[in-house]
Amino acid sequence: MDKLKDNKKDSPTISRRNFLIGSAAAIGGTALLGSYKDASASKEFSGWPDRFGCLTDLTACVGCRSCEKACNEANNLPKPAVPFDEGSVFKEKRRPTAQAYTVVNQYKNPKDMSKPIYRKIQCNHCNEPACASACPIHAYTKTPEGAVLYDPEKCFGCRYCMIACPFYVPAYDYESAFEPKIVKCVMCHDRIKTGGIPACAEACPVSAVTFGKRNDLIKVARKKIMENPDRYIDHIYGEHEAGGTSWMYISGVPFEQLDFPVNLPKNPLIEETKGFLSAVPVVFTVWPAMFGMVYAALRHREEIEKNSRHKKEEDRHE
Amino acid sequence: MKRSAILIILTIICIFFTASLYAEITNSNLFFKLDSISDKYEPVKFNHSKHISIAGNCGICHHQHGNSSTLPCRDCHSVSPSTFRNSVVNGFMSCKNCHGVFNPNMPGMPGLKAAYHRTCFQCHRGMGNVGIDPKGCTQMCHAKKEQRVSMKTRK
Image (cartoon, rainbow over all chains, first blue to last red; front, side, top):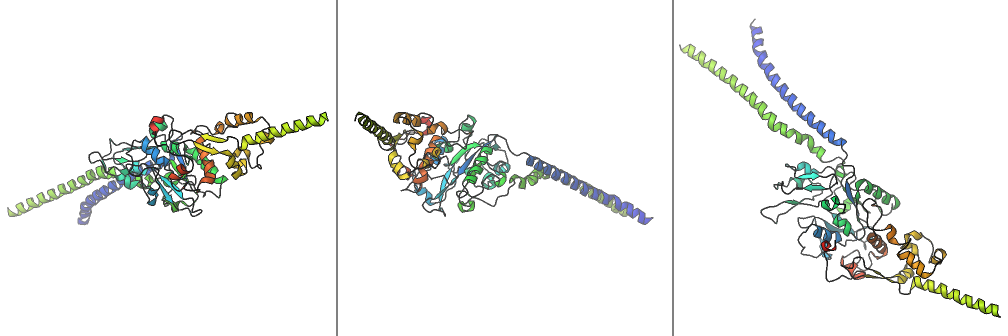
């Protein structure tokens, strides 16, 4: 009989604990499942169908820096200290800054030393941009035209996008003390929208930067590679890298020799973080409430026990 | 006697005509003036005859010629020099007929500027400082104008 009583005594406490643990697991599980569903839903979206892009033919570029100059003028950027027709800038490897949204770097050509290879760097306008996913306040947008835009009005300068970008593109405007902002190439979005083409592509004397619909550009690139197998390596950089980018490249030498990041996954980087990040709001809202309730319940029990102990002691004293 | 005199005269006329056609294409005042971006650069003086002698094959630059051998002009273009010239510059054989203003809907077709430059760079890249220093281009072909006009005012 006593045993039964003990069992009865124990059973409610255990079951309540089990219940709480079980419900916590259930809530956490559904939250995670939900996020997984979201992530898989984005997999089915293969990007805006008619989005534009650019194809940079690294074998055609002659390093005239016309693109840098055109970009500077189109975006009303300050005149650089070294003029655009100076080749001395090639001595060091540059990266895009707040004063230059695109830069051209020079590399040695292992095939022919008299013809250096030039690599133009700018935002690659990913199909699923990691910068946009890292931005806590949605200052970034991927437009249907293909460009990844940034809204300086929303930005509060956390610079997560700079860390998230696999191509090290977004630059920070350190110069302005009061309204610092992130800056990067916007693929001349205003020009594209009115039927124009990006300033750099327009200025390029050899059309090493070719503007067009991304799907068409992939076909053009494939055709070039097929017709000139000695000139190009069989790889369109940006077709699949980091889930695909709007800006793509074809080259005569392997891309790692030109400092392209080649260890990127084929899937968008967003998928690596999406499951975790979508669980964050759940953790911050549901978990405090849940554990708060558990804590309150336990406190309540302790108080009842305390009160009953007090009562017993008082009874004994009496 | 009369017959042979007429024959001789006809032959002379023929030789004269052929020579004039050849001369028209090779050397006489065929310094083309390419000046589409003359607001930025001095026009390029293009010496056609020099290029013919160096290239030795029209097809190297004029890709629609394929790889046919040297100077087959008369085989296809048996017209008067002025008509021939007119058809190249303005008519059905003009470069700009296909290579016009770049159209984003046809990214496989380079615009006129790109088509010209690509043709030049087939040989000129690595010549002097062309393709090594941005100044190489201005040293070899494009003398730079002192007064630079920005892109904005060009529009």
